[in-house]
Image (tube, rainbow, N blue to C red; front, side):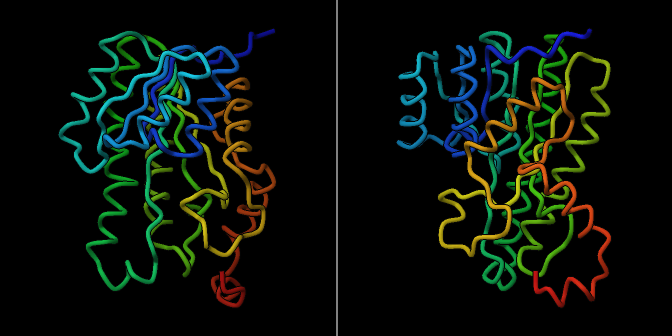
Length: 251
């Protein structure tokens, strides 16, 4: 019987103030992770997040990272990998935007695409190269069900997540057999600060539930994780639904 994949002892979180990322880091620390890097723009929130993980017993450091500055990604991530092997890199950065405003101001829409997709392409390739060089590791990429089918309500954000999802899947194929694997996580609506004030959608979930699903996916060696799991079936139906039907549902 094949041994279950080991949970990480060290991790690098890109998007170090993300509620989902921090819930995941806390869960992995309770499972034995001891070295954590939180990457993000310098801020009191980033330092506070690092302090909260240190209080759990993990050696936690921060590193400057800006998704909108791809030219800096190799240096930023190189600094982390130069300090020692990283078992898991979690991609948890991104912006939701405001669909109505973003449609009226194209530069805002471009910023969403650059953050959620272009920044992830750059950082993803840099991280993948570093993991290959050390011979092992996992990339966990937070995608979203919004990328599965274009919706009037959030197609700018959804299109950026669709690009991210396709890139992550392709990167997983490129890394197959190298000792490095990619796991794509597709949560539905997650109740966080970022979604506060938005109408709650069906099958809403929490950062803690996403963290639990990530742990289970890592243990199983999964390539794709849906949160909650029922969304796999829901999105399969919506993916093939006629446009006229979706317009009638006002999704």
